Image 1 (cartoon, rainbow, N blue to C red):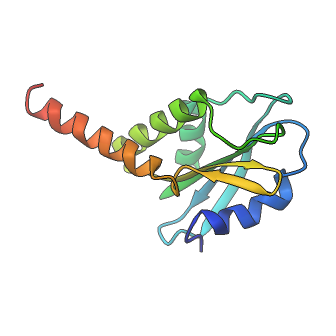
Image 2 (cartoon, rainbow, N blue to C red):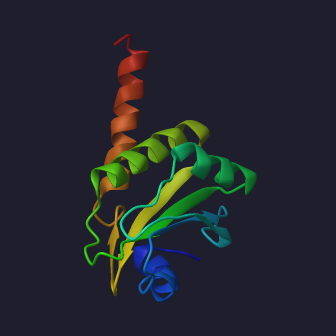
Length: 141
């Protein structure tokens, strides 16, 4: 059972920290946060990997997951998220809220470190932004 980012990182750090190219994984979880399946969706270059929200969501829906996490690595040595990482995570959180599939986290792995969107409060912030937007739209805004 995955309880937090640290547990998820403990599974994926050994696999991804020494990779020379970026790779992007989706981890599908059941209703009790147990890993149902994991899949590498894309392999990129030394400094980028292309992934789209629709590809992630199609994979999660096919896997009948209750929730999911996404993970990718940065061979560069700096796990800070890029603008594209923020945008993808926001898109997934909003789409997940619509589909009732929770995004548990987005981890960026680099060497023996990781960056967790959940630990930094960003998943929660994106959920609140979506809820505020929906509330505003339902009020005629």
